Length: 111
Image 1: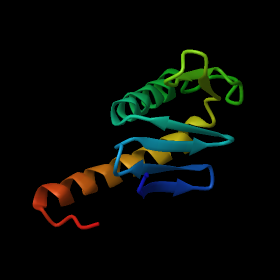
Image 2: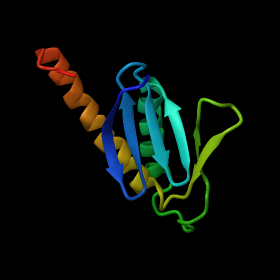
Image 3: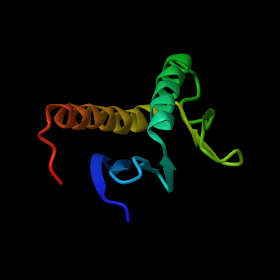
Image 4: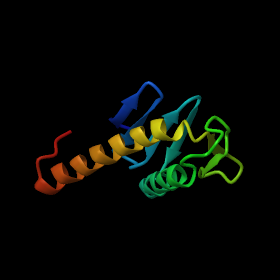
């Protein structure tokens, strides 16, 4: 049974960590994805890359940014104008993960 820790919450979605299986549930818009920590860090990098690549793009609301999921048949499709909102969730979650790691390393973690 999963025991979740909230990593990030916004009006656009959330990220939570299961302490048992170490997966992250990422909700954004109308979708929910369960991803590994490795996938989380890869997606964060892809989001940052997409923001750089589409900076100044003339059609900011076109759904042109594809982010892979663990299913070969499913993608997260975003517009350049949506990227900052999902990046905010990822960055807040990344910060929470770093704090969690530090707490564990210092031996002050408690359930």
